[in-house]
Length: 223
Length: 401
Ligand SMILES: Nc1ncnc2c1ncn2[C@@H]1O[C@H](COP(=O)(O)OP(=O)(O)OP(=O)(O)O)[C@@H](O)[C@H]1O
Ligand SMILES: [Mg+2]
Picture 1 (cartoon, each protein chain N blue to C red):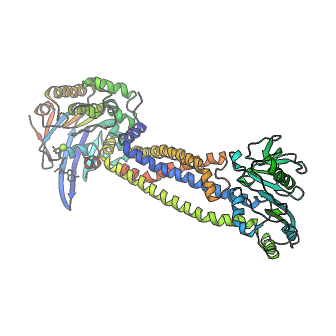
Picture 2 (cartoon, chains in turn cyan, green):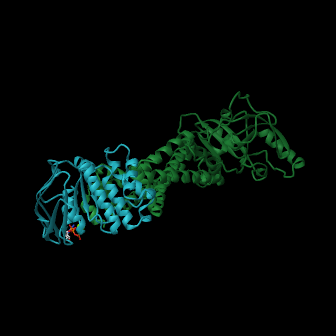
Picture 3 (cartoon, rainbow over the protein chains, first blue to last red):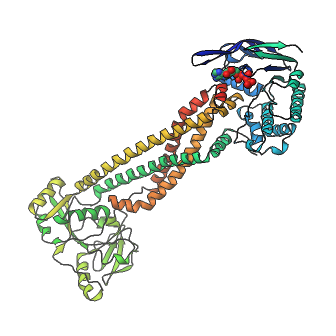
């Protein structure tokens, strides 16, 4: 489904090179759930961005369903991001000028994957327990609620791969539970592939495979 | 519920930063407003010049030398005035080489009756026998000439044909109205015969609270038509050579004077507008550069969720267009309103016959100004929008954090 081949990413700061991702090879099969742990600054977010085609690797390839992302033109790549990939960010990522509902629908403005975005968005709002907050603006929602809306947004176009960066970072245990259940439900229903960066032991243990990121390299951690 | 799209996103973005949006709107308003003002001015001036070529219907105007300035003001701006010289000049002018027709006019003291009308009235006596400038402006069935207490009214006079109006205690019958000439001198005048004017003056002693004194040996101006063998300037020079204390103004010269006066002003207006426009262009461009900078994270996320480069480009351009469109309309409304309200003042200060072009031209100017204003927005947002569309999504998201 999604595959990294010899992926490398180096940042240059004031002439000094920091290699954050160093020759990572990874194959994730369709419907698989993979968790990634690692110290702060170990390059997890960078890896997810590389896999999601929002930053270009210095070396190596990202293959999505056999297609090399960076061999595509920008339009095709954008279409792929729109239809096949869903991002859940580590930080709050809602557009402040849009209501929860519009935020969830936003990705549909750039593609035609969904016929009736609003209906689907409302269904998603129900799933995350925020059906009564559809018309609320991000600033009128709690941090955890905002995060849940961002999660719902990632699902709006029924992507095939979800790239989640600490998706339950600021959620209480119960909500966290609900989100995990949502992930499992969607995974079971539509065979969605999940790559989840997390410090949460429970999520990590639920994954089919677990990886640890260290010094730019990815190592599989046996159960 | 409206579907989410770029338009909604743009409008919401503009609403989020209301103060900045309003400031940008004002900048756009300045662009369109100035543009409209400048073009209407330029049009008005060009019209003034065009009319200048036939405004007199005469090639040369002869007035007392000491009243030259007054005469120009009267003709160009339609300021009622009066001044006198000896009737004897008429014959002398007729004998000057190159002169074909001469006709006297008498400008009657204005201050004594302006009280009765809301507009300035120019009371002018002509000699129907020799007149060649006034009667051709008559709207229809020109009676061979004026007789008795008949008058002809200019376009702007609030009187109807057949009406009776009193001046200095004498009643006059309006027998004709003139076609619009665009010149106050004609449009706001009442023309009567010299004989009637003298009679009116005589009667005023007994019939009017304000007596009028007219000396039968005096006239105010002589209109001259040349026979074409010599240029009007040459003939004017000859007239001044032959007669003392008169100023002969060739109509070309009148036009040239206006042209000289206005062209400086015109250059000024164009220069100021250009500078202003460049500043606005820069300001809107800079503002959008800042907007893009500030919203990098958001734009990066839009890209990450599948927005193509052109979506981002369009979003920024759309915001610029919305601002310049709304601001442009605002500027047009303000600019036009202001010009309209001040047009009389402007005309008087600049000695222009009129300012506003015809409604059709005004419509075209309004549309053109609006288009220009929107184009300004498009041009100034072009670079910021392009830069925004070229951001690498992840880079943008992180930089904006
Ligand atoms: N644009 C950049 N320029 C230079 N260095 C960068 C840049 N972006 C990230 N880095 C560096 O790359 C390293 C990895 O960053 P990344 O955000 O991937 O870490 P992370 O594993 O997601 O950390 P966290 O758990 O704190 O989110 C960090 O040391 C960071 O300083
Ligand atoms: Mg991170």
